[in-house]
Amino acid sequence: METKRLLIRRFNSDDWQDLFGYLSQEEVVKYEPYEVFTEEASRNEAVRRASDGNFWAVCLKDCQKLIGNIYLSKQDYDTWELGYVFNSRFWGNGYATEAARAVMAYAFDNKAHRVMAMCNPLNKSSWRLLERLGLNREGHLRRNVFFKRDGQGNPVWLDTYIYAILAEEYFGSFAEENV
Image (cartoon, rainbow, N blue to C red; front, side, top):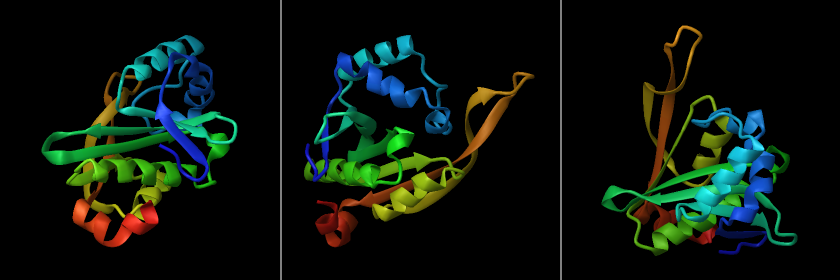
């Protein structure tokens, strides 16, 4: 996929250095279900993502630098789940919005009934992006998930926002601006 400024392609094993460049940033993985990545973990993750059709590498079109990734996974009932993680050096430039719009168009062109996403309510940048994309907040799940444990081994429970947009909403209101 291509947009005005981005090339959105499948991962390859050579992407590990750029992947490490952002997955090793504490501020990038703060709301993710994993810790910062080491170089070795990034090498392994690049190989894994190269064989996982749900992950898309987002690269700057002019120089091919990988600046983040989009996750798009087909779920039950023609629902597709959207996710994204970007290098903090490239935040605030609209790249995540541009890439997410492209993959949403791809999902709806491939007969998605609905595109949904989840995020931590504390991650204001993420849920504001979802709202810019036209997704509606459908729910606030309270203390529904944990990824870490405290010093005594107790779960550190987190809340989750659920967002979604239906195909008829997308095609009725957002398709032209999302292309």
